[in-house]
Length: 148
Image (cartoon, rainbow, N blue to C red; front, side):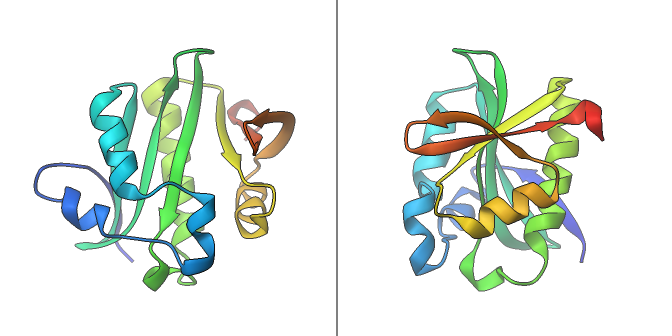
């Protein structure tokens, strides 16, 4: 594997927008098209493509929640055709490192649907823990970067 995180550009946005999760996961995350549009209109969010060599395998969006100055991994997905290949954990580690550097932060927040057990186990395996808060119907998890 030769993994990289790349900026969304006019050259690759369609490729990333066409990626999708499996049928049973659609309720857990917004479409990549919606998220790319959101980051285009809300500059506090950064969209990025997740690549293995030149093959687009996933998408992520991160940024600063301006209401409470928290750093969020707001979207993270691996295309259904590429799930089960070990990408999720590797890209999540890469994203955490990049976000820590970019934002000089000590905590990274995300939220999950309570019934998304696969995501919970993935995030917990990297040290994210529930902080007891809810973001609408989603449970908030936090990674304390000072504990690594």
